[in-house]
Amino acid sequence: FYKRKLVSNIYSYPMDLRDGGLFIIGATCNEGVDPKQVVEEIREFIRSYTPTPKELDKARYNTKYDFLRSFESSEGTGSLFGGYLAKGSLKPLLEYYQSVEELDGEGILAVKKYFNKGITLTLYRS
Image (cartoon, rainbow, N blue to C red):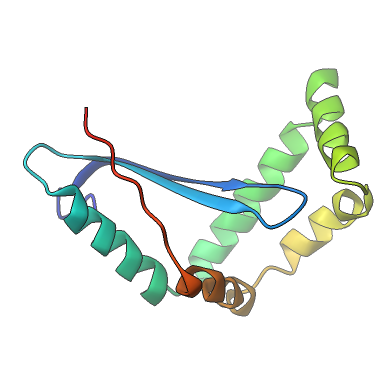
């Protein structure tokens, strides 16, 4: 997206809910770029993407770092535990670090089935 100069900014954010979640992808299109083209590019990228071992290592490292960093303050620790308690169980929190370590390409590819069911996109113009 950046190399082709379609967008100046792109990000993703998983909504971590108790029941089925929502995965948000946002992008800021460059001037003169048709947002519908960007939408189609994002769809195709999601459907065809396969992570490399280097990308998986980077994701593991960053996820562990963010997890450990949340314990640096009492507010972060309380928010982390409170979030899991609100979802009904601390068990996923206690198993989180190990599950990140076990993350592999097949696990990520298994998630793609949810994106194949349907990708809904909303465009905004400013």
